[in-house]
Length: 93
Image (cartoon, rainbow, N blue to C red; front, side, top):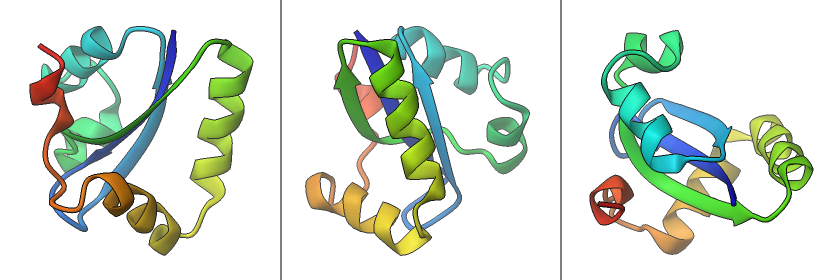
């Protein structure tokens, strides 16, 4: 399973979009400072959105699509399922 995910620094804060085949491990990397330099610099640790795909090419294509989206569209996508911007990482344990 492959996952496209969005991290946020806070509600309506800085956003980071990534793709992984191990969401728990990748989230742990980000939170320990061993993931992306961008995530570490801007403290973007809150998992606010996830989509899952069976094939890596589908997940990568979706990640690229989301990265091209306007910020408002990304916020609408997040708030469609996570209005309060809760940290979905808490639900993964």
